[in-house]
Length: 324
Ligand code: ADP
Image 1: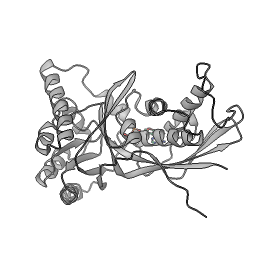
Image 2: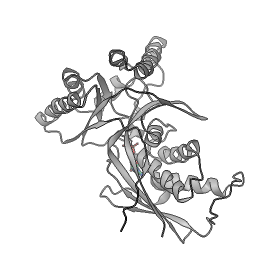
Image 3: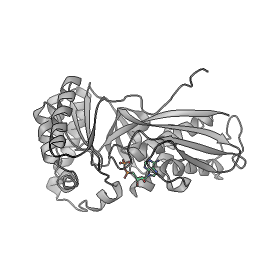
Image 4: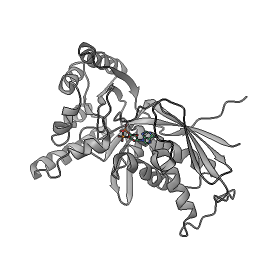
């Protein structure tokens, strides 16, 4: 039976100055999603990990994303036939999920499963859909976890590198150029649900604060394309989200201070937390940053995981099958 396995990377969204629109992919950790076609008109979920995530397709972001894809194929406005032809009234999908990214980590756990599932299913269907259509299906899955339509994790997870979501409706994703950068992620082992972390956000901000925010985002994007590390460092500033969300993260101020002192260019909350990320110019600095930040959590007996990674420029990719 035909089977496709893909690797979907973790992602850092918001990136301090780009709330809900900026994100990048990292090489580790990642989810592995395997999809096969079954002779039953259903979407089945099987977990190969111990996270106890829902197995009902419409309750799991991966299942929900694939259901959105099937719905599109079966809708009357979808005229393009599958090649080779398949009758989805007689077949379904089995999705096996091996999560390397802990749910509620703030590094795009739900996005990785949603994107991984649609990329694998699309490969099984002979690459029937284009990138923007895949993003739409993954968005339907991601919506289940965060109760909001935002593509700042799913876009870099699918495409790799840094992405900017110019608009979600209609989807308009900009791939950004970037210089060599190394990422430190410290993940305190507590769970923060995106849906909960969104409830505490301010609904209105003063114009002065908004001006600062879009100035920083513009400067950050320019710094990325020019490889201007100093401007990049100056632009990683946020007066809107960080002040309200940092209270959810143990020792956030100390962690950030330690990271900057160890030589990081800047950083802050990854997604909605609790992960905290830092960007550095070299692998060596990123390792030192990890060590200094780990020291803070060790001292305070907070369990955590630390990752040092390059930016992943490939995004979600099919893993070639090993020859028997
Ligand atoms: P993260 O930023 O780590 O993705 P979210 O809060 O956005 O965290 O998503 C995690 C939520 O999504 C959890 O409530 C989890 O139960 C739910 N969920 C459903 N299916 C999955 C899946 N396949 N992978 C990860 N989370 C899932």
